[in-house]
Length: 184
Image (cartoon, rainbow, N blue to C red):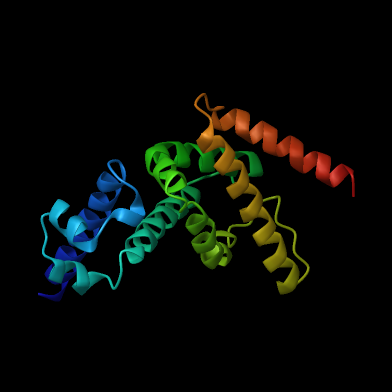
């Protein structure tokens, strides 16, 4: 019975998140109420509050979903080179471009990086050729540097109407990393 309740709860969460993004297509995030989200999802406000405390929790739920999905994509890679990791990153983001644009439009894009930083140690458990740490302090700073850089590039990429392909983005980022390491 508990498993059935969990499935129902997960489905309700999904519908509520989808309702939020549907509403953000029509109006600013700041003007959207919990009642509107619940109504759009065809769920009661009580269901909303059973799963979330505030509407910002919907954003966290969505970003958690993105991070989990991205982690599965990375885990499925056979060749974890930096180039393949970057290509996978931009391929993944292109599948979620409309939601990312809505987050930017509503000044919420920073929440992606903030939450991603919470997961950085999990994401960086994969050993790729660009991770070279001597200790945990270096690991923390290097991971944050990688996340900040990729987030900033993603922010610019999302704004572009004519986006570079994931392969082109990998070449640009590899060139930037090469230039950085050559100047040290």
